[in-house]
Length: 332
Ligand SMILES: Cc1cc2nc3c(=O)[nH]c(=O)nc-3n(C[C@H](O)[C@H](O)[C@H](O)COP(=O)(O)O)c2cc1C
Image (cartoon, rainbow, N blue to C red; front, side, top):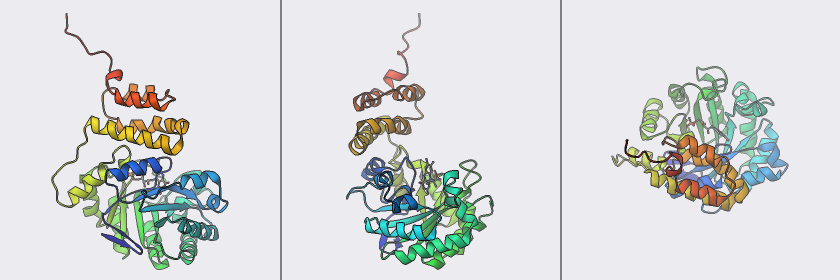
């Protein structure tokens, strides 16, 4: 159990915010398979304060999609505070502040991972947000540094977060300069864990239960935040939870299990986004579920041309038969 102010997490495993990935359909599928806590994707504080319609759509949720965290990205302390109050009023269970986004559009004005090099601004943001929030826990998610690989920037920011009254921090063990290259540095997460008393979530390169166990033992962190590992793998949360509870039962989904979950995900995308957008989004999502099989490349090429939900469902149902060519007959 991880207590975070008004929210108590029953497991140590949470899903990270991922732009374009952790939408409502993704979360509803993952919850059916045992994910406890999820994030929406990050939203811009400026856009939220302006009540931008596209931003409000990104915050779409349902009653069964709980507990749920929202994440704000921005660099102006006042705007971040204003946006934080809106997030709390919308009924989310936790607010996270983004200090990790590497995208130039976000870092150029000073947001996301750029804040790792601006501790004074980061602190002003923390204080402004905490002042505006009445009830829910506030957390920060950061990379281990901007270009400094030592982890000291994350240590400094985590200390400021704790001092300002934040309830937890998450550390992704890569620098901004690294992007997604190289292995995540879990030792840097250990340095943050040693520096603060609030819970620390470790993040980076957890794709199975063994990875999660190694991250926990290497860093001493309190919880694990899953990122890319959760895409097309809603079994991951339960299998980690089972392993951490000492169970040797290994949840290994079959191809049929994956097709079933993919079809459920497709149905929910169509339901929540409409057929046109849902099918377009599913051109990418379908590949998350059916990678690593013979015929995957052909499957990807084929679904990239599909336009209706019916065609998409058939492509999944018929996988891999229609993509691996005719069965080879007896040799003559
Ligand atoms: C497509 C994509 C979108 C992402 N969007 C966000 C985001 O909105 N907010 C955030 O804090 N991190 C975001 N991240 C970073 C992930 O949450 C996570 O920190 C990163 O992928 C490392 O974890 P992993 O190695 O387990 O994937 C994104 C990552 C990817 C690949």
